[in-house]
Amino acid sequence: MSQTLQQAIDWALDELQALDAPRVDAEWLMMHVLDCRRTRLLTHAELLLSPAQCEQYQQVVARRKIGEPVAYITGTRGFWKLDLCVTTDVLIPRADTELLVEQVLALAGNDQFRVVADLGTGSGAIALAIASERPDWRIIAVDSSDAALTVARKNARLNQLDHVEFFKGDWCSALPEALQPHILVSNPPYIDADDPHLTAGDLRFEPRAALRAADNGLSDLRTLSTQAFLNLRDGGWVLLEHGFNQGAAVRQMLQVSGFNTIRTIRDLGSQDRVTMGKKPEVADHE
Ligand code: GLN
Image (tube, rainbow, N blue to C red; front, side, top):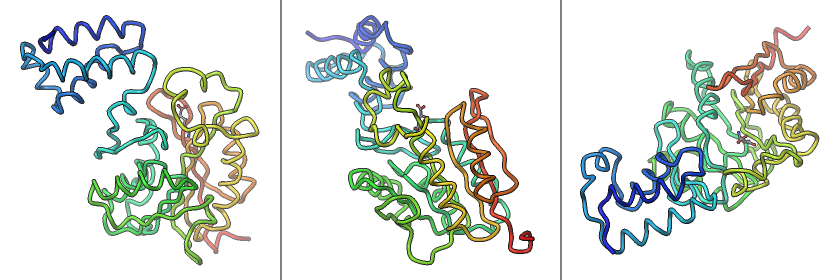
């Protein structure tokens, strides 16, 4: 049975009505099937879909209906100004994480910071966004998962950011010997294993290892805070993404590690999301 684009979207709106944003989802999935931009959907409502397109659309809508995230169905997600590939081996990049990128760029406005490492890079989102804005910096991205690194390297190629360097391993232990970055940035796992959010929405489909951390979600943040202090150059900065209710705990762990000028930045929803701290300059040491 043939359908016009408009008829297919109307059908999908009905199918997806129980979800948060049926229209957005229906449109993204149609853009995926037709490999087109949104304006085409709006200007070609009467376009007759081929039987193959109808069938593919029915299949992707059925996957979305049972909760699979749009980004995993289409295999892509926009982050910063980049189009990134995503698979179930990596977390889907979040708009809130762009805050980390903004803060790194703001810190380094005076260009004195030129070596940046992204720890737990996943799809490569943070490292690649920074690399796209500061092409002459040395950008290093680390992940403990081979599968994630495959996705991140592919994203570097697709976005012509081949100079970003990738290393496999746990946090700072994967950094090249004797490298002392000016900036360490990370969006680590920070959700407690018992958090009910893990069993709802998109999170159900995302890699547990990228989401879940022991000790109320704080264990990786604590490891990063300690390791960052040991590995950063004097006067360098650490920036950590964390849960909305973890700001005070992260500020405290940065302080215990020896950082100063500690501050927390709020996300688009006015929730604590990124905490940063500066490793003292040598002259600051008493
Ligand atoms: N911000 C994500 C969420 O709560 C989690 C990301 C993470 O654990 N690093 O949906």
